[in-house]
Image 1: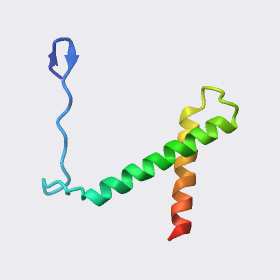
Image 2: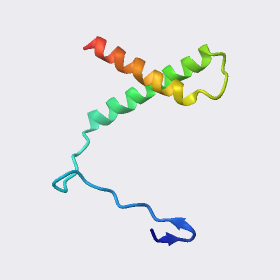
Image 3: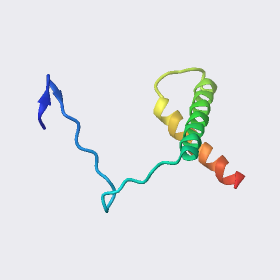
Image 4: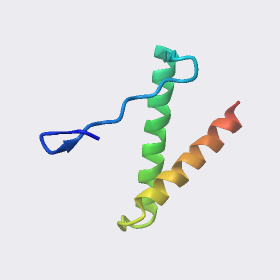
Length: 76
């Protein structure tokens, strides 16, 4: 890849087959943001329950995602 001022250039974004991008609807953006906020809160809760010990941030995040998905499935 070519570099610019010592930095690597970002690769070009690829579009789905057919060359068209799907438009993200405003309500979908809100749902995704809300879900992410819920995961963030749940991950922090897991961190707090472990006594605020560092080093398990990814594990906390993935477990929080799993728990939030499970909760959302139960609601529907």
